[in-house]
Length: 209
Image (cartoon, rainbow, N blue to C red; front, side, top):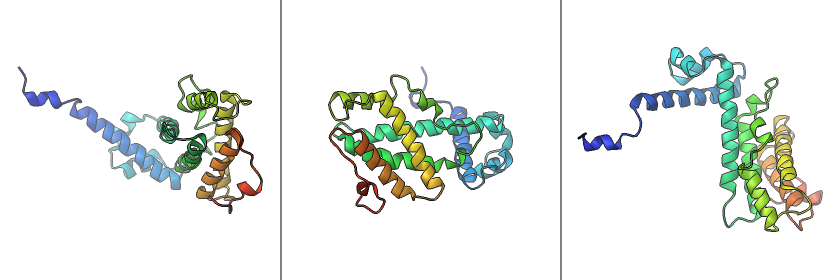
């Protein structure tokens, strides 16, 4: 019979080391590409502290690393949604959390936006039936919390479109990230919540939060 301590071992050390190395490379890529989007794999490896041969074991080419970052964008955007949706939250409260969250993720990965042919939220543009935001929109509409004249799939698409537009406003300097987050949240609430009517004054950046 094996030692009882063996029962606590859930993953071989080499696998844990590999995961830590991969995470270190990704974290380094986010830091360095934020200031220099054209940084080389050599520079990213140096920033990560991981041997270059190990970096290339995880990411044989630069595009493999970029794809990993795009996958992370999708993962973090889904996390924003699941964090925003709590059992006792009203639709307006969910949108109040979604707006800043969308801007936060966009800011963290803004260096990916200018890559030719890359759409960082592409997997979310054709949502599966179990996509968290689409599920919530469908259920909230059925509960009467959202407008019934707009299909959930349409609202889903418009939220992503408005999110990209809001991040563009930050990118070109017409809005700060905080302003964009608040304005996006307010726009979503006044657009999709049943019985809410927006006005130009309500959407002004200097209006009350």
